[in-house]
Image (cartoon, rainbow, N blue to C red; front, side, top):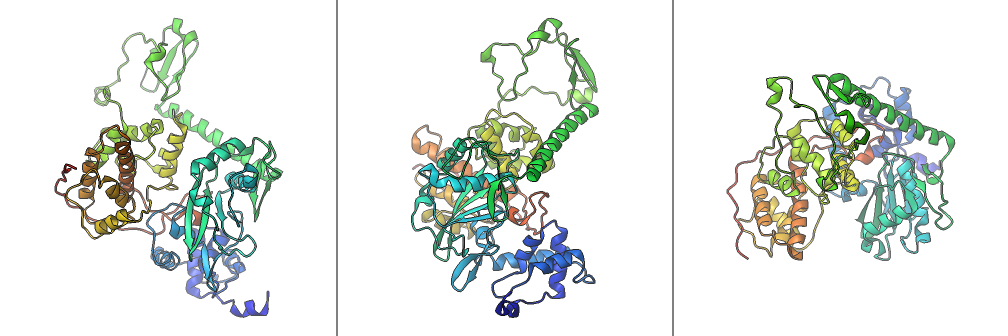
Length: 543
């Protein structure tokens, strides 16, 4: 350590020690807690955090209360988000990314440098594929560990955001990046792309989620960086072939997941929520009763994957002998025939019109089988009253006819993906008007896109959310055609409705990059909800 740095390093106050203890108690790691207190103008040694954890420093200082910690978190956010506190929880939110950097002598510098969660590249080039091979290796390493950020336009030696000189990153469709990953890796990691302005410099960001079923493996050779059959893992500051110890940990986690899933299914049988079938006798037995499958049908039974049943295939699934009835009058009240399918339109309209549904879980499960990926979901999660962790586990255990849609639902439930998107021009002016309480009474086909994009840009609730939902219904009424413009308007309306759904019903939690990925997220800051009054109906005007 130089003498200059030693002079600038400062001691922690007792109040800060109390806050550090409270942050450590939430499950944050030492370097994540250090992130809150170390600044360019006030250096704090990371060793101080370790000493506080061990009790060799500040042993007599009590931890901060929850109220004190909440106040500190909100104040820290306000200071480290370019003057604006974001209400989204997306890891690629501009304020979240900016908080990873600090201003040093007029330049923006990555605070913690390259770690097992961050990597910097000076330039971006997707094609030819060999030019992107180093990034592919990093993405694979992040996916096999705890996930992380890959920055383009940041010097990997100085950690300074010099920005990208070309618009290649901004102009690249995320689907192109995904296709490159599909050809090189299996299973395919999930990435989120963003472009962030830091002091007038354009920085490209790829956020990589930890894969749910690692290891991610290279399936072909790419340049000199990627070798077929190799598993890459993210270590401190580098991605390289995995070591035996880390591979054993991945295998052990997979075994634990398999045992947990088996235990869950056996518990369902034990409590009566699932039944067993004897393939010799054809008897299906549950807690409250049993029925018999015709013996002649047993050899030809086809177990149909959920979501793939179709009468057009012509093969009978089961032939039952006798009537299958509930065992009591009370249970008969819950047995009903569903005569209408859950459709994307029904999912959207029920939310916008605040219509209660009998079985909200069906409106969540159905979204794993739709091609459309932006549908209101938190309205139905709230109505189901099901614990979010159990709901996610149940979804992941299902076999979806559209796996990509199922993944999208899980990402939104985990709040790693948001419908929030900023727009400039007319949508920006409409957003400002909505925030000021100026909600249009009429809408025309020519203004639908501007209004929907303005709603999508909202970062907080407005005074009359019910009237805003009425406005979205009016926009939908003008977008029922099958021509290209109508389909484009509908697509934008669906995502805008998802933004309203997030603002009204989604829980608020701390950004995922500040939390230990191996622990469940803890809601540190809180957010008060606004009271809503019944709005007057909004009718569509003729264009």
